[in-house]
Length: 284
Image (cartoon, rainbow, N blue to C red; front, side, top):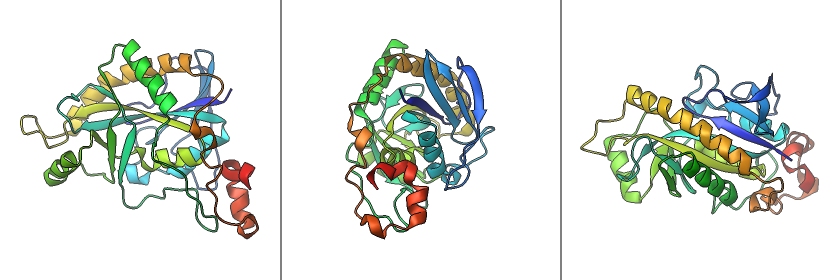
């Protein structure tokens, strides 16, 4: 069975209850991942944990080496990634402290490498449904069992940051119909799909951004306070989810790049074939 990966966001810098823990440094063609990967066992399943911002929260959202992070997960044999992310709520019904399992993303990032393709290899994956339906459904059921107030589905708009939204931006995003706002799940989800890793998100709602006239504008202090309360819940959801994940994947994620490569095989540079052999090798 492939390993289960967890990418921890703000507040989630370690995985409690892991057994046989060890740290591993992984080299990638894309540079250094956010930190060392933490390997261990949870509920008898092999787990890989990575703090997205690095230990001590060193990296801003746009500074995260997403390609290296996902490449490292793939190299360690990860087939599922559970992303844990702090987000702002764009809907009154999603209250601070609630959990959202989004099923859509809207990309408003500006300067992040978002694909393993390029530099001599062209390809396009289908991304209409950007999260793994099976893993998302499992997370939702696990959240309900953990006693969370959880919302199934919704659109996560990913902004560049590191600044929070202006009031004008926040109000426009609301009119677009998005449900939550964050800074980290794109291009993470895109790269996971290219790498044929199932990906789904536990989004921890911490605030109402700055659109809600009856609520105080988002502040770091308020966000961190909610995160502290939600991290324990996130740990419980992950533990419940791990128990439910089946050995064999039957979702589209497992062969997402099968027909993606357009470049003729004999035209792909040797270095690219070597660097991306882990990602696309079976199709080259």
